[in-house]
Amino acid sequence: SAVISQKPSRDICQRGTSLTIQCQVDSQVTMMFWYRQQPGQSLTLIATANQGSEATYESGFVIDKFPISRPNLTFSTLTVSNLSPEDSSIYLCSVGLQGGSRTEAFFGQGTRLTVV
Amino acid sequence: AQTVTQSQPEMSVQEAETVTLSCTYDTSENNYYLFWYKQPPSRQMILVIRQEAYKQQNATENRFSVNFQKAAKSFSLKISDSQLGDTAMYFCAFMKIGGGGADGLTFGKGTHLIIQP
Image (tube, rainbow over all chains, first blue to last red; front, side, top):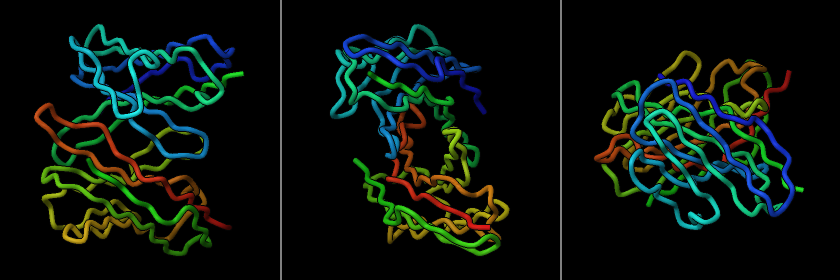
C-alpha cells in the first residue's frame, strides 16, 4: 500500500497568483499522477510525473499553466499558475501500485483551491 | 484512449436494500484493471473493489460485488444490505497497465448514491 500526504488541504488565493501543492509518498514510486476535480464533477488526469524526466500532460493541460516538479521518487509538486476563478477545484495526487490482485491507485486527501 | 460511462447521476434506496450501479467502458487495451472508488464528503478516495480484466470470475468484497462482462465492456457494482455509511459518490475507473506499470486512471462521471434510513 501507499500513504500519501498532500499539502495544503485547502487554500483561498487571489486571481493572478499561483498555488503550489505538495505530495509526499511513504514509498518510492516511479510515476505519480495529478488530477483535477471541478465542483460536482469527476476526476480528470492532468499529468503524469516521472522522476528524472519531464511530466507528461493530458490533452487540455499545458506545462505553463500546471508546472510539475518531481525531484525524487517520493515527492512531487503541482503548481497552478496565473489563477482564475475557473481554477477553483480539488486537486489530488495519486500513485498506482501494480501487484496482481493488489493493484490499486492510492490518493492524497486533496487540496481544495478557491480563487477569488 | 479509453472512456468510462456512468449513466446514473444519482440513485436513492432504502437502508438494507440492494442497489446496482452501472458502468460501461470502451478500450482497445488487453491488460487493464477496473475499479469502483467511493468518495464520501471528506473527499478521500476509497477503493471499494477491483477487477482484473483477464479474470473471468467476478470480484467480491463482503457486501460489494461486480458483474464484469468483458465482451460487452460492462462493469456494474452491486451493493447488498445497503447501509447509511454507503452514502457517497461512486466512481467507476479504468487503469491501463503499460510497460511502466500502473497508468493513470480514467474515471466515469460518478453516481451519487443516497441511502435513506
